[in-house]
Length: 193
Ligand SMILES: Cc1cc2nc3c(=O)[nH]c(=O)nc-3n(C[C@H](O)[C@H](O)[C@H](O)COP(=O)(O)O)c2cc1C
Image (cartoon, rainbow, N blue to C red; front, side, top):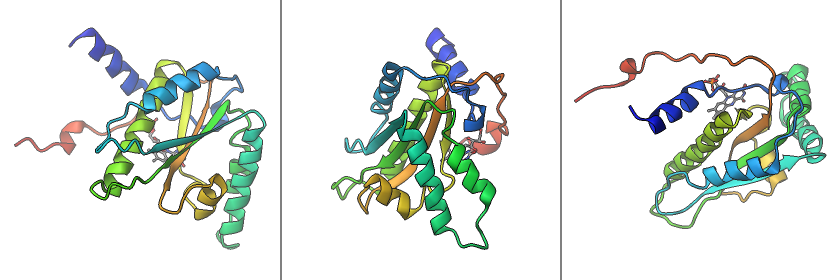
C-alpha cells in the first residue's frame, strides 16, 4: 500500500505474547520504557479522560512484587482450588524480567463517559505499548493471571475502589526464535452491508 502501512502491518502481525519464562534477564533501558509509555499516552479516548495509569517495577522491586503477587494468590484461593504450580509460577515470573508494568484504569468524573469506553481506551493504550515493544525487539506478556484481577491487588497498589486493574506487562528480551501467530480468517468475522 505505502511504506508506513507496510511497516505497521509487519509490526502488528509479528507481535507475539512472550511468556516470562522465555526471557533472558537482559535489561531494557529506561529511555525505552519511557518511550513506550509515551506511546500509551497517545491512545484514542472519548472525552479526553486519559484513564490509563502505570506502576513500573524494576530492580529489587520486581522480586518483592512477585512474592506479594504469589502470596495474594495463596491467601485468596480456597485450599481445594490452590495450585502450588500456579503459586510457583507467580513467584518466579519476574526472575528474568527487566520490568513489570502494572496497568490500571483511573475512573474519571465525567458521567457521560461509560466504563466500557474507559476500558477500551486503556486496552488501546496497552496495545500501543505492545506494538512499540515489538518494533524495539522487546518481549512482553500482557497477563491477567494469578492475583492480578483480585481486589487484594488493587489494595496492594493503592488503587481507588472505582478504578480497575487491566493487567501486568512482563517485559524483557528473549533469545527464543520468533513464533508465528494463530488466527482464524478475518472474513469469518465480517458482515459487509
Ligand atoms: C487481556 C489479556 C490477558 C491475558 N492474560 C494472560 C495470562 O494471564 N497468561 C498468559 O499466558 N497469557 C495471557 N494473555 C496473552 C494471550 O494468551 C495471548 O495474547 C494469546 O495466546 C495470543 O497470542 P499472541 O498474543 O502471541 O497472538 C492475555 C492477553 C490479553 C489480551
